[in-house]
Length: 364
Ligand code: AOF
Ligand code: ZN
Image (tube, rainbow, N blue to C red; front, top):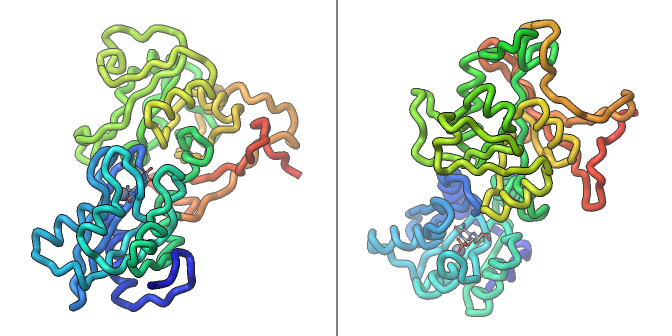
């Protein structure tokens, strides 16, 4: 019998190449209640075929790779399956991958990181007990990074929250006469659509919904709406104009509350694991005050627009020592980058910990 999951194990160059192919396949996946997962089958003669999980309710990555291998008449009885997440061991929306792997008579499995979902975990042990050679830990960091937001959502039992701010250099989202289109550049807005395309839901308050009549959809570089859309969400008790885009969209979820935690509970129950909060200032302030913002994208335009509307309202911060501290996030891309004439700033927020009241970290 092979090494147990988690045990130190050597991996061949071909296995490393196959896991990298699996990670690249995983990145083809779409957002949803499920993580991004890729799988690669490495044959005895060095051929690699991949598969990835295409979204909630669709076949898992392992099953996709096995199906492709069967279509290509590949001999699986001498192959190794490399997968970016521990194969699942549960009957969820699809059958257990462990069963599919056993049925395919694959003798050797390598997975990058364990499945943090207790309902699905344990596949490594099941396969090892069935006599397969099971190893883990190859490209573990890459796999964890790929699903960091999903893992955080699962751990906190609420959607991972990304806040978007698009403001002038003096921190305003609208001028004194309420004009606000467009403070940031077309390049910034294109980037914002890329962010929209990766989330499950996009939330604005009723104030923004009424003032701007946004569609809250994700559009590609050509301006055309993508096939797979995040769910538009409006927070607040006011009614929407019946002819507004959001009122006319049957997918819109109107959460008639001002309680951020309640809204997040409802969104999590509806399957949202990544929420983009786009404002306006009152809603952004409420999310920051509740201590539930995990990430911030701030598009900073090189404009000074004088007395207008600040981008974040209602933070009960009276003195500098109570300031909410953000952390420049260089993990995926540089924390500061240029988008056309604007600067894009990417921040993480401090992990508030399970006992946090949501109050800001102090600056010393
Ligand atoms: C895998 N391979 O490609 C994925 C896995 O509702 P289900 O049946 O789709 O199961 C979802 C859970 O399965 C998800 O929360 C995660 O723990 C695992 N995802 N597992 O073996 C895959 N996407
Ligand atoms: Zn599975």
